[in-house]
Image: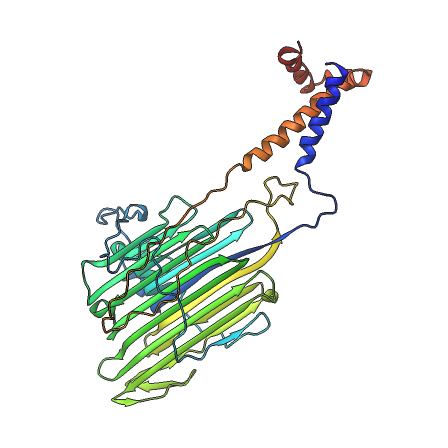
Length: 456
């Protein structure tokens, strides 16, 4: 190789290697990282003992129409056009009841004491559950909506269950109505949507006779909502459970409205954490008489005690971790305790150096993900009386974008390093020590490849 050619090759290789390196004094950027491992809303939740759990038979592959494989159950949307929300049509947004008292705080303020939930194996009726995370280059978004779901055991009715994942081989959208065909005065509606952003949205609602939860507990309309997304450098989460026309004890105790609301905002810093929570009971009637039920108070009724459980909020680690439990209304007797209309959220939030494609170059910032495809505007929960006809909304479209080309950076840097090594090996042969080094494997093999395929 002639000297001018070697000089040009050396300069080019050095440029390629240095192109990806950051400036020596450049500040390392910090980006939002978080993990909301669980956010749930439910109409009813009850802890199960070992004996009670045995009453729920495990899935039998021989009799289950899907062979107990959740990836095989029906995914085809079956809701009528008047009910279906599809992939992009906005749904209800979690919000507090109009007459609720919302308590808010930050990283330095907590609320209440942690309620006792007994067994970790719990039966959830009409549940919406979501999770959201973004750590470096690995976002995650997913969850489920189901008529009946047992923690650590799974869904009970595949046809009344939807689930979605945004960054896996599972569907990113499912919507189901049960039973089918739909009777508009008595049905259940389930929706799960997860997408880039990351963002995830889950809805479970029931009407009429499909809102019967056992032990005499029934509701005219129940709604469970979970909405989690990242927007403008913040992670935003909101959860709502609302029960209208609740019968707690048939013929004895009824409630017009039971609503629980939880929301959080965080930019990853301790001072940037904001949380809100509210539990509202309106129109409690006992034996035909209106009764006021303050937060934390209980009322004994025919061997049963009912009361609003005060919400529990526990920020920790300087505002980088948060646990919220708002169990709603507790109905207790000597044998069992159940929670009605509750919501929960658990997560961690931080700011860390930007992720890198190459471990020893942490300053290379990965491409930013596009904004959330789920930005539903606020809508009111459908009233029991049919509303007047509304103008048809304009169609909405979603664009999914994918970031590519990450591998090219690693290939360019590796090629530049190999070119520089080859030049140094040829240059060192003018000295005896260099010739001895070139005779040692694998350098001898590199030299042979050079003479065989490159040198002419």
